[in-house]
Image 1 (cartoon, rainbow, N blue to C red):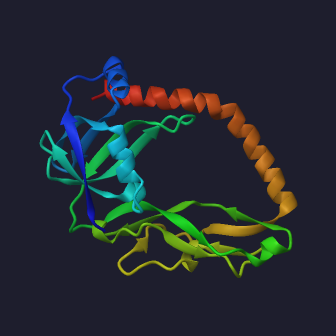
Image 2 (cartoon, rainbow, N blue to C red; image 1 turned 30 degrees about the vertical axis):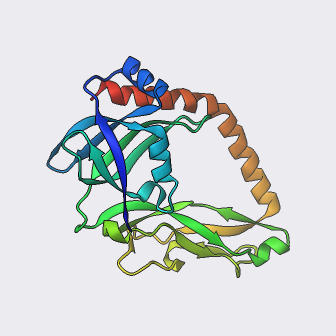
Length: 221
C-alpha cells in the first residue's frame, strides 16, 4: 500500500471556540500521537482529508504527514474520526504514528460479491458485519475482503473463517462468527422495523453527542 501525503499545521490553542473557528475556515482540529511520542495538536484541511479517505484504502490509508510540528515526515493512520451524523461532515480526527515494520490491528471493510441464490426465491441478504478486524503489517493492509454470496440460499450463512485472507493478513478474534446470511423476508422486515424505530429515537441524540465528543476531545488536549 502506497503512502498519501497530507499537510497539517500546528495549533497552539484548543477549546470549543477554536474548533468552531477552524471549521468555518474549512479545517478541523486533529491530534497526532504515537508510541514514545508526545501528542501534538494540529489542524487539517477538510477537503484534503476527504480526498485522502476517498481512496481505495479509505480509513486505512497510510498517510505521510507534512508541514509543521514533530510528526512531519512520519507515517500515520486514522485511529479515530468523529463525524456529525446528519451532515456527515468530519469534526475531529486522531492520527496514530505507526512502525511500518511491525504488525498493527485495523478494521477492514467487507465487499459483497455476486447475488445470492436465496434472493431469487424471496430471501433477503443480511449483512451482519460490514467490517472485520485483522492483524498485518501496515503495508499489507487490504482495502477490503471479498465475500462471495452467489451460492447462498435461504438459511445459509458465511462465517469469518470462510473468508479468504491475503498472505500475511490474519483475523484477530478466535470466534468463528457469522458475517453474512440469507434470511426469510418476513423475519428481515420485522428486524428492520425494530431497528428503524430505535434509530429514529436516537438520531437527534447521536448528532448532539458527536458534537459534544469532538468538543470534549479539544478540551482535554
